[in-house]
Image 1 (cartoon, rainbow, N blue to C red):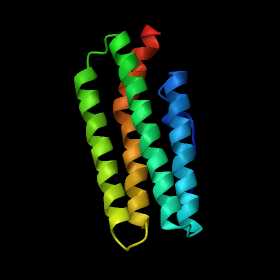
Image 2 (cartoon, one colour; image 1 turned 45 degrees about the vertical axis):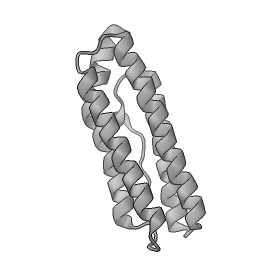
Image 3 (cartoon, one colour; image 1 turned 90 degrees about the vertical axis):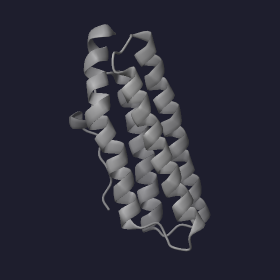
Image 4 (cartoon, rainbow, N blue to C red; image 1 turned 180 degrees about the vertical axis):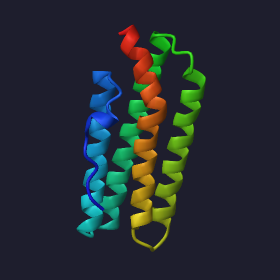
Length: 133
């Protein structure tokens, strides 16, 4: 799978959120390269853990901004965050508990997991915050 590239399509118009998203994309690309290089299961697990942990931190960062600026869709956005984290943790457990290697399907799932949230919910948040910050 080719790398995810940062471009204006993924920008939500708020620098601190965009910076977080760039970091998440960077870690995704590290995982992508690790899979291609057939790195050890332990290395893949550590990289996936880093992606999940960074995402958890990023979500709390967004939620702080939502609360500070009284974002009207905070509850819905937080629910989506919780669902995204649960799905990533389930994928992590599935991959690490089985003897199968990290597949292209797993990577595609993570790509959609990351980009669809940025393009939809975070896009709405960014539009709101652009007028508040």
